[in-house]
Length: 139
Image 1 (cartoon, rainbow, N blue to C red):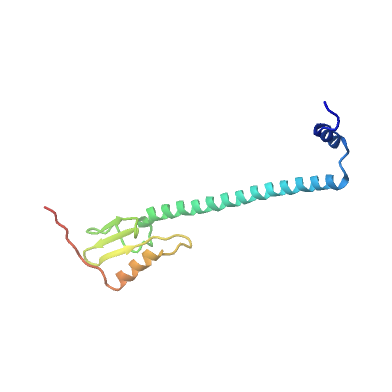
Image 2 (cartoon, one colour):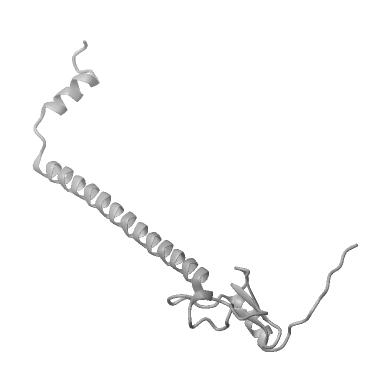
């Protein structure tokens, strides 16, 4: 090997003791990288907890939605003879048909849930009397 080659220079540079500032810099960099990894893990756990909470809220909502007609405070009596309570799911959860009292649109909400924009518009139309009958017959 030729004296003064770049390989000799690299070897002698690596053989020298690391100066204190460089050592401190390497340690600080390592700690910073470790802190970033810990922070990223914490953010991931927070995101996962939020997702699980939201998922739990959705499951609870579906359960309440399904069982609602069986509860005492349901706004209509689905067991009354001659009536029919039909689950739709969208844009409202139930329609209740009563030949004496008419048709009732029922949206089931649990917790802090509120009507979405589409449901609010439908509610406003129903309350304004903008409901009609249509028969579709195909031959």
